[in-house]
Image (cartoon, rainbow, N blue to C red; front, side, top):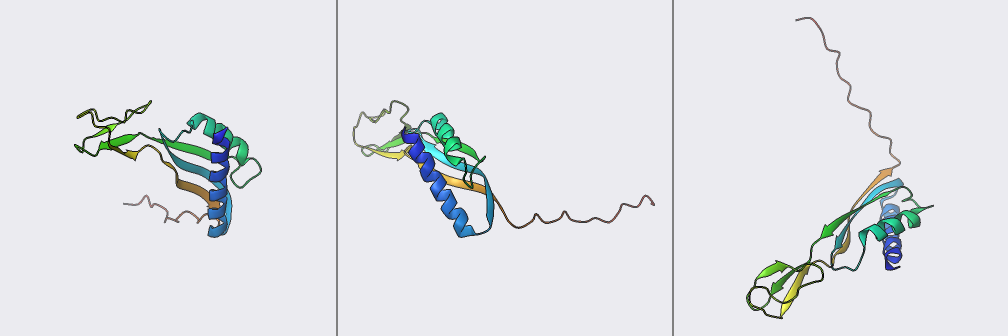
Length: 133
């Protein structure tokens, strides 16, 4: 299952970033962009991620995946379109076969939320409200 190797790579990268940041005590969530043409099944990735996080700094972390639709542009007429699945790589405007894939292959960590060892700052204190007018 290729999704397990992706999950392990994500965990390695997040753990490395947490080590570099210093006093990280837990990772709460990881946001990942997954292109529709990346060959990754988001549900399988979420399952593998949960299993692979056990016993790590990411144990219990939520994996949030953002789908990135595939888009292409015709090099002949500059028309761009959503390629869909299975991908349609011939230009729907002119029928040209020379296309550039603009989006859809992403597999990128775009956000990590973690706790660090610093205690949360206390809430601001307010003066009591006086009932005198």
